[in-house]
Image (cartoon, rainbow, N blue to C red):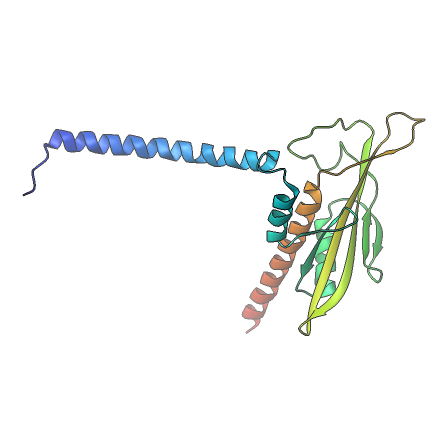
Length: 197
């Protein structure tokens, strides 16, 4: 047998539900922001095996020379165009036959600023080197892209440059940008073909 709930209790329950929903709406974005901050700050895992597995899940491989590489199932020319668009710096070397894109030296203050800057950017400069290789996989074109960032710091005019280790964030972002440019280019081609028919 069901009992009737007094109307005042129904209103009270509704008010309680609405207030809980409002709290949840305000707390969920905060928790999401905290989780993303934890991811960016590197507090998830410092175990190299865990980090390698996470990067490999994105399709990015760590190169033995300190760079990162990823293979795209696209023609060499399409990936080359996407890489040129993705590099937002002045280009010093643009050799399509050799498969090399290289930026000019960029002052750290003028370039990419990671969210967790831990070193002084005084006298720091870097260049990004992108190498591409053509290939075939099951008879279809594949292009491997390798991205390396050379970072160095000069403490004063007379001192020699001291090599620094990259935080690797910009290299990963560049590989992601290349992939996104490829996706956008393919979508434009599909929509143009649909309009033509």
